[in-house]
Length: 292
Image (cartoon, rainbow, N blue to C red):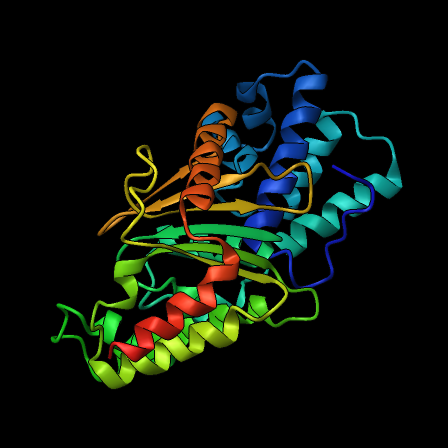
């Protein structure tokens, strides 16, 4: 972990901080030649618990981190203090935790990573990506096929989706690069009025310096390996690997092995080449508005 990594500033997110701390503990354990089983014995836990800690999938008890640092021979008091501060920050709930009643854990992990990302590249074939949705468009998507949902739950889901968009307007905004299929612009989600407002919203966002929007036109065959929608997330610290996120109906897949990520990076590069150039985006959006 870089010595410049800080734990006090709120853009890191507890999910990312857990992964960073877990990676640091794993490297220290391996350098000390200590097995996960022995590390687990030190903190009165199982080998699998240590594995989950090192992957950042669970929270950290300060006592456990302190005991592990002792076991691994951490003698630098400044570094020990920094890591203990990191463990405390990693246990702080993110703002999205208040939506726990309407958000599955697998998606909560994504939101935590999204907050920490500096670059998000997304390919979407059905809907406008959540980070660029208007409130009414988001409401229509949330209710699609779920008319049984209580109004309060719908409101919470929509509020969560809109609040996530703050990463694009914060002082150090994330960069977003989106490729959407042209069919997204013609799918009447919420009706004509909602779609018109949504496309106008895309026109506005596409002018922002941290947002790149491309459209895959009907005239393009696309990219053969693309398949369905996915997102690529990149982070500012070398301890946090790039992540591919693929969402399913009731679960999600996270890929971070180098060969898997590289494959999706190549697919995304192919999509950006096959899509209409950025200079054509405004025209395609304006044409879609004119057809309504």
